[in-house]
Length: 333
Image (cartoon, rainbow, N blue to C red; front, side, top):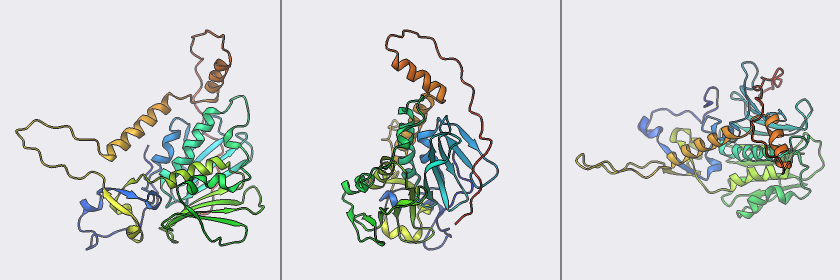
């Protein structure tokens, strides 16, 4: 379900000399580098990897949509009217204290969020349903390089740290980076910040991870930032202050006209076609995945019983029950 209501949008544009016509404004373009593309106003890409998880639509409070793992240990919240658009957390048990939290602000491309949600969906699928632990709850590495490796492997370099005890990693264009705090902090303090774009409310994207966030989850998010693949946006979604920093290429250039007398010729798929196909396939794959902890337990039991020859289907599992106590409202920054 597209999430358009309440989402932040780039600086509004008027129909002036800068934007000659509406068709030009809503033209789809490929934006590179992707970390400067900004949000497209929806959370579709970030939610696609967990489309098969229970969805809780909340009418009250700042969180508009909460997607949880079947056992509710992982929570992905969409705050459509907040500066921090995404809040993602994990806990050892559904009712226990949060172990780590990651937040993404309203400028962060949802494709970057998808790097984290994809890794979480994989970790959860691989976790033993009989164990209260899982890789998504692993202790972070003692080596800061593990969280930043995708960036350094892509040629991002060490920068000059702003504060003592921190490490700065900067992209070759100087428009994105990571700040890693190596000082001793409490479990809820900010340890890693991924950023992109010049400072400013509508231009700076930020992803913030607390101290106990597993390093491989930060690395999975950073890997998307380091990916050179462009993303699709409409022209009006690019903030004016960012236009000189990005490369825009028409996503679907006009095809030459075909004479009416000639038979129709199938066109090659456009980048938009490819994206829609990929999302559709991801959703279909997700729909076939186990939806509840009970189903995961059945799968785990079958895999450990090599001599079993049963072919009967598991008993029906009750549908997910909406959360009784959604997260308490927060103050916007």
